Length: 427
Picture: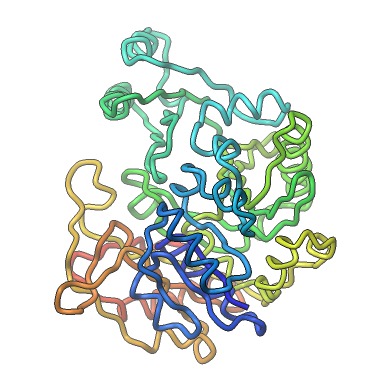
């Protein structure tokens, strides 16, 4: 069979690479993809934008594709699933209405509260002057709060601050973007974990979990980013906490949405914090995570291509197929452009990118690069086109050994101004 993955980043590369391993798969098309993906067997990039729904659906039909998988947020938010379903084309992803769980932090928080899901308290603000007035009160402690943009910010709309000045600067930054609303959320304390499920109404199967590193710099310093690395699994989560996450995070939400007549279909990403009093749900996203997918996919032994086909065909077997994993841990480290994430200056793009092909030989050394922000210049040379340029994943029998392999090989990806964290999976 042939599969279409929609998106262009490292997450989509990891998904396409995993699907291509299915013995029944002859080709994985990625639209638009990026040139770093095509070094992998069975993967072919298609020059169609991820929001060009007419062209994507025509390509789907013309190439006799079995199903499409949406990786990226923007086409989901613009209604690609509704468009494909209107043409009776099988696609994995949520409808535009369901994407509000991610595209609106305020809607998501209100949904969690209505579904009685354990989550932090929050206040909502529509105007800068109102939040400035609230922050200005003498008893306000900024260390007790987290500021979040209501709308999609590519992982860079969350501000964890320590001073009023930092918080006010973050407020001005968000409100200067026309039409923004924000919420102040009570800060929780504890380690974070991400869980991923494939959902079909109230039915779902857990694909796995991972931990990501949002801050730009070592030891959790610097601005928030879309993610600088990850490891999977989060083997420190107790069975009791995992049960709570599944029961109160996934089951409760899916039951509530189905009861409202708006059942959720597609990938559901749950971010949780494990506090001293148990797990609290921080957020939901309506797609796989980036860069968590890059550490999770190499661990999965199950043939996801066949599982996804069964899902799109409404076969009852998809929920009973156990997800099997290769032993050990996956660790992923992101290499980003100079200037990333671009909060205080411009991201430097257009620099030449090279890599040693040895890091693409998964069967030999259990290390693999996933290309994200790369393209070709007029001379056909690979250059950086975004903030997160590439990432490297290694799989080994334990987390520390997987991290050692990553950092042993990370110098084999080279471009001017490359920056990466040195402490992924080290704590």
